[in-house]
Length: 278
Image 1 (cartoon, rainbow, N blue to C red):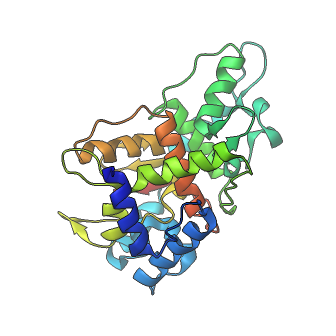
Image 2 (cartoon, rainbow, N blue to C red):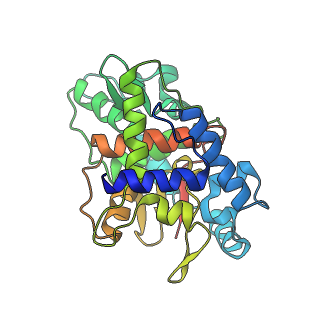
């Protein structure tokens, strides 16, 4: 039996997930959220969008002071300019999306039944650029992160409501993301769940490990460690490298499926990006 299967089963038992052959995303979501509600009983459900700042009062106080003058404000302004900048053909990023692209980040990621794959907002923005004769942007940081920050900002307060359509390929993508989340990897032989489920709220060196619930809601983020804004897939890659595993390609199927799974696990929370983190 593969190692990820063994760990997925062990974690499923820990979380109380149903050990059946047929996938049950809604059962997974309920068990996942109940686990964190029980682990952190003093944390209101809606506060899990704030990561470690939802569970540690001292860290929260420092974070709230930073948020008075958010380090991502300039990126939002830059993103707005890029979002509205006219292409050579007279169109703009907003031209490619409903409602002119404002307040629609909550519609991503989604499973595209025509394409048979998960489509993220980052992919949609770059496809907009190339469809209009413009050069695509890099996925981890820089201009694209700023555009995503602006689009996230216009979507703040909307509910996470990820859907899994009645398509076996969509369920397969969800299961792929779930398996990735629980699979051990790298020289340290650790998974996403080791840190952000089993050890959430515990310290690793001087830092507290954040709960996985709500992780996706606040991206892109300005990290003090980076000194700049970065995307969710940049963070995924960094986590892989921290367990001494080779990172997958940003916006490759592995990370898109992982984002799909983690977004579904956060259903019912609100979008609050962009954010700031250590």
